[in-house]
Image (cartoon, rainbow, N blue to C red; front, side, top):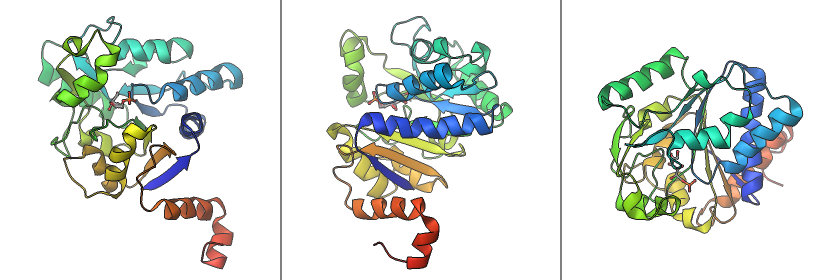
Length: 267
Ligand code: F6R
């Protein structure tokens, strides 16, 4: 797992955007896994800027979102479909039929979940999955106790998640109690996972996911099993990492690998 600490949330999102920009340029038909929530908003703003000012071309790109509340209409102001349309898709030249968000109104939930998995496979699998993390360590809506290898499924939200997301709704009562979410197995099958977190309220989750034991009680810790997981955080979210010096050292060494190998140790 690579841990990169940035000075602030904007720098964190700009760095994450660089990974995506580089991927889209290198592989114009790439498949992106996307997240909603407040964390990646500056990332999407940067992708829009790159599209408008630097011609970043989304025409061939396919996207799959992590999750959607259930039940919820796609037109609901808090649906993740609407979030993605308003925060990204409406502003770039992506083909709408290539953007996928689980259907929050699916009548056959199991079929919708199986179909979502099938569509990801058909598209060639996820090249890069963007992730946020809940204060309880959830990724997607994989709450503590979720299977660490499961597929897309119907998840029951915890009280804590409902409470955290109540700020987007008219109070906790209005937050749907269920969601369709990629499973951790789906997420781990992605070729590159990029997890972002900012703010002091995320520091416990970040410490557990990076340095804690692999446990379903912190679903994000499953990223420890991923061959290419990049955790990008800003100073506040990094506040409880005990091996910070080492993570910075790794970044320095990777920035100048030849010199690093020659000298062997940090200067
Ligand atoms: C959103 C998602 C969630 C959020 C997490 C953090 O699609 O899957 O796991 O990433 O709840 O949310 P924010 O960014 O609002 O703190």
